[in-house]
Amino acid sequence: MSTSPTLHVAVKHQVGSFKLQAEFLAAPGLTAFFGRSGSGKTTLVNLIAGLATPGAGRIEVGDDVLFDSDKRINVSPERRRVGYVFQEDRLFPHMTVRGNLTYGQRFRNKATRRYYLEDVTDLLDIDTLLDRRPAGLSGGERQRVAIGRALLSSPDILLMDEPLASLDSARKSQILPFIERLRDDVGIPIVYVSHAIDEVVRLADTMVIMDNGSTVAVGPVEDIMSRLDLRPLTGRYEAGAVFPVTVAGHDKTYGLTELAFPGGRLWVPALDQDLGYKMRMRIRARDVSLSLGKPVDSSFLNIVEGNVVEIRPEAGPQTDILLDVGTPLIARVTQKSVAAMRLQPGTKVFALIKAAAIDRHAMGFGGTRQRQKY
Image (tube, rainbow, N blue to C red; front, side, top):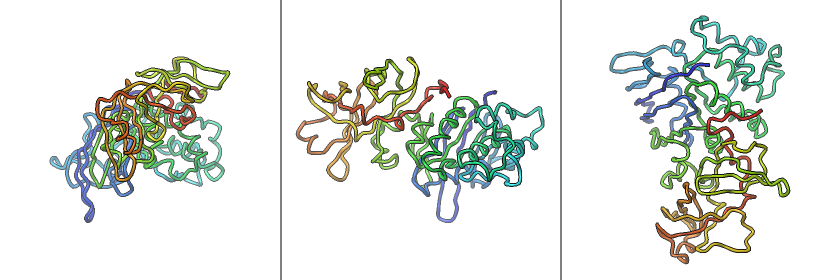
């Protein structure tokens, strides 16, 4: 499967009193739009798809201009080579899975096709469903078929507007690995809309934070999640640092896995991954405690040394503290503790992280471009 050029968006748009102004780049991989309901995420996706027309600006994929207000270019939706996966699967109920999948191919001649039925059914593990109809499929299966149909239109970019929102947690856990496959294997920009931070952390290469119609921050997931100033937008309760790790060892006796990261080693509940496997992990701020001295005879398996970088008090008794432990790490402690420990930027501390607090939902498998084993 071939690669695709970068998506570049710089647009202004107004609907009633709502004003949208957005600018970002999306390279091959997964770029997540994240923000509160009503922040403009779906509106922006519809502008890219051509389902709505910006008031001004430019949308381009590589050298192909999809919209340019100055040059009066506005390519129609059916000519934009954009795949769109909605919250609902929107499959044709009278067609088989095979018929739904190949529907998009009808609008592409063979010379411009990038993906083929065998490729997509293998990628999404839906080859055994081809002769069934949508009514006989589970929610997760239907959504995988919807993704396959979008891919078989051979798009230059793939838009996914909260594709897991209608699924329960069990169905979400089943389909997440397939979205990881898309991210790592299809080689085109994927724009993914979500209000679930755990999905974004697991799947995204790049985050676009939206608030009240504006793109207020754009960057790698690791950078965005380590910014304390974005806590009101990325979610205070789920706040936590994200960083790359590598499987360094397994302790089968106690059911633990050792992970290497830029600042040292961490123990987590056992993972079924080979030594050397690379992934991304998130440690929530609420699961990190601080000490001025290195504890002895402690139940904490994970004790890492670092320095205070930033202290950001919040309304209420708690505050978030950005640490440098070889990688950014965030701790949430009381303001009373900050005062008692006389914490300030530059203070040497030890971060204490419970191994039991780190679960599989904190892991972004395949998040470093290494394909997950299925």
